Image (cartoon, rainbow, N blue to C red):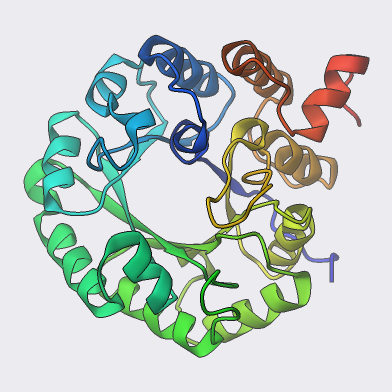
Amino acid sequence: MLKKLPERVKIFEVGPRDGLQNEEISVPTEAKIAMIDLLSATGLTNIEITSFVRPEWTPQLADSELVSTGINKKKGINYTALLPNVKGLERAGKSGLEEIAVFMSASQSHNKKNLNRTIEESLEIIQEVKKKSTEYGIKRVRAYLSTVFGCPYEGRINKKNVSKITRKLLDLGIYQVSLGDTIGIANPRQVEEVLESLFLVIEDQEQLALHFHDTRGMAIANSLVGLSMGVTTFDSSIGGLGGCPYAPGATGNVATEDLVNMFQSMGVETGINLEKLVECNNYLKKILGRELSSKFSQTFNSTKRVPV
């Protein structure tokens, strides 16, 4: 299974958005900007920096315009933001971003609970956002598909429904669909089955990304299955920041440091400097006042060594 691996993978850092929006405390704007600037120095080429949703939905990210215009945008890095509709699109365009991300669920119940819309209504709004995106200087639109591997209301999701929605999103002009394990319930065999079903309806494996939560400690194992099947884009969060309100005790997203360490120790290039990731982790520990869940950063801080 592991004899033919991709030579290189892409890490899509979501900590500044997906990570911080789940924090109980509101991180100061200047600290968010400093966090993103530290991430920009690690070799990451894709960083999701904020979301343009109504402030009452995610008060932790109510300063999205200030963050988007305050960071030091480095050439060669793709800075993106999440948004739910055309109103959010307008705000993103004014902030100078060239890529956005839209979101919906593979579960009808979760989609209604999270967005107050049916799946079909969400697809219609995403179509509208995609059509109008170029008017605001947006060059690419990505999509998050939540609850792909399980829903807190419906349980296991039919993989054929996942494939059907994914195909519809791609047909709307979405360049990549990130498959979310929202409540961290996926297992390696299930990941293999879902990907096999999806490969029947896509033209290119780069049209898919994997977004695992580490609720049950399975995110690294699930990522390895995706890697072995040819997936080359993985979402992750510095320090493992994040979580899910529907999964009590969830430790958040798979940690960027742990994912990068696994890939690079296997000879799969990421272009990312692990020591600089640890620097960012240590900065966030001071800001949040607690230890983060990344095993690599904890080990590195004890030994000051990157394993070879």
